[in-house]
Amino acid sequence: MLYPTAEAWRAAPNKRVMVFGMSGLGKTHMSTILRDTGDWFHYSIDYRIGTRYMGEYIVNSCIEAAMDHPYLREMLRQDAIYLAPNVHTHDLGAVSTYLGKPGNVAAGGFSFDEYTKRQDQFRAAEIAALNDTSYFAERSQTLYGYPHFICDTGGSICEWVEADDDSDALMSTLSATCLPLWIKGDDAHTSELIRRFDKSPKPMAYQPAFLAKAWSKYLSENNTSGDEVDPDTFIRWTYARALAHRQPRYEAMARWGITVTADEVANLKSAADFDLLIATAIGRM
Image 1 (tube, rainbow, N blue to C red):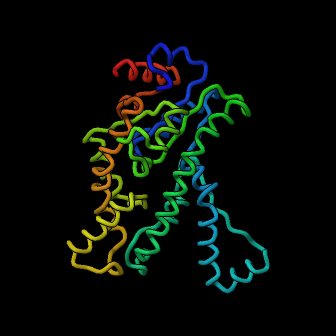
Image 2 (tube, rainbow, N blue to C red; image 1 turned 90 degrees about the horizontal axis):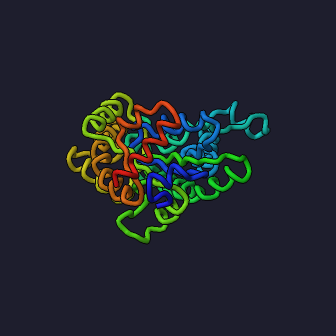
Image 3 (cartoon, rainbow, N blue to C red; image 1 turned 180 degrees about the horizontal axis):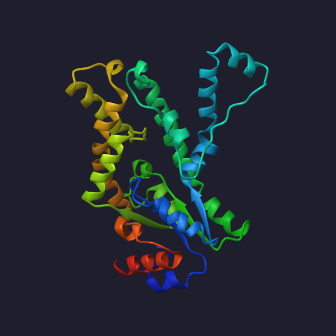
């Protein structure tokens, strides 16, 4: 690890951390506390995906929809208007809406082929954004003068790595740049995440093999065809299964760094609290 002991962490003049875990457990809370000190550069993987790697896909899909409207079609042809996604560091709404949900087109779904195409686009985008981490870590220090750096990853990072493999390219690159930090939730956190998702289901990214298996099982269990699937019902059905699928993958990633609990993160109030939390977590190893 970059910081093998608590003393090494405390003494480091330049601290770099990559935080990962299920969405909703405190990654953004942690990043915001550090960013607001003025000493930490916040690199949001979600923001990088939306602005650098998925932006053109989103714009093209909006143009395609607008071209069905005579007035908007003419405005676009005359170059009188332009379309652009509004991406925020705290909100991946533009990207998740583009990803969409599979199922009945009349209910807002996509065909499964279109859906998996967009999933593949996101996978490539997230891997590219993660591989940009070292570039932004160096840039934040040499160009902007930030002494410290936090990489705020998306919940789907675990889908693209094989962390049990000591030579996994992505984990090797990331751990050479930052200290991997897993925010671990418990059963109560998982239940709350499922409750929130059930109330407001949102698109998410899945490992291709997991998605194919889930789609096939859902169709079989419900004796239905893909074009009859209610999109929200499917992703609600899939969500708890996706969390269970991801948990051992996060655990495998954790061996590359340290682990803290979601409750510990919720109690953070300052950068000093964060420093103490990391030192304590290193000391627990």
